Picture (cartoon, rainbow, N blue to C red):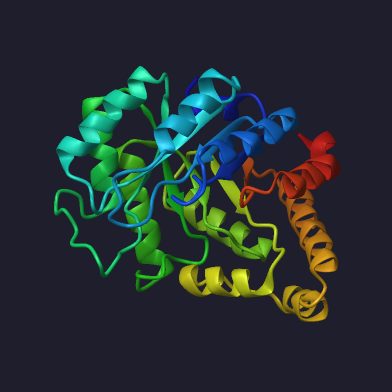
Length: 284
């Protein structure tokens, strides 16, 4: 099923997982997925290897999610270091694996690799996929503006290009202040972007980890959130529980304000996903 069809029926709940590191057996992710399955997500997306990497388990994991666990899957596909020939190969691999959904990304720059030069922006990849397949293509978006973009106005213009190229739905980068998302949603509507937008929610369980991630994506940390991290940073259990509670409060508020869907960045931690889903399951 193409995941864009889900939004016609309900508020969606989806998860993101990532392939294990090369030093870890790939089978470890299948245990994670088995624990996520009873939570009944509408789909699970699988991230790609680091910048410049072409050898990864994304398609295999997506195939297992779709064909073994009977959950719709979304394969991440960054393009900056991909040739057109390699993308075509992966489209064929996905088709053979019964995968119908792609999250089309430019991908992060990696100073250790030279871009292939075939794709400069995610919109280039979106157009290419739509030209060569009937895949459902999803785009990423940044409520607080892409770190490399000069302004949110320019960023939304680029986002409109992506949607016009063929994106049927969008998933946001993480954010911790819902008012930021509502402001972004209003701006996208004014720009004529009328596809469903899933809100990306990151449960925080580790202060150092989230500070590193927010530095990379320029997400703002509200004062009340910073107080939570400062108070519980040396108590892992309390930090975990506080992070879960904060994510739940975000989700409750988003659903009350008619969000199209929630995309939970699970960090491959089924326990956290389970606790959040227990708290909000009646809202979906």
